Image (cartoon, rainbow, N blue to C red; front, side):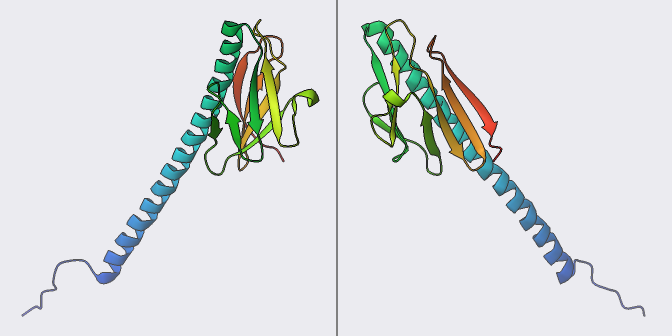
Length: 152
């Protein structure tokens, strides 16, 4: 009589399949995590641009100069309701504005005027090597977000 061999998988085959499933799960989780972080940062830059636009609109509606303050030490900015808004963790904030619009070494300011113009400037949000520039035109007060990769 011929001995019949039991049908099924060996322990080695089972371990190989489990290892492959683990590697696939890790790859998917890394991808999802990076996607969520990117979405959070894109949302923060859009909110910042929206706050700048709201400040410009207030200057036009009220017929008086309005200030938009950025605190680079605390990574916060002050919105039109005069509330400090903190950026998501891991995101750094910097501002390039006129020297006269820097009340101290860690605060920058962009002023908007009743005709819609501004003192202009650039607010940069940075996470790792990616940067988002929120540019404010001095002539028109237009606010534009530009997504770049730092070259340093």
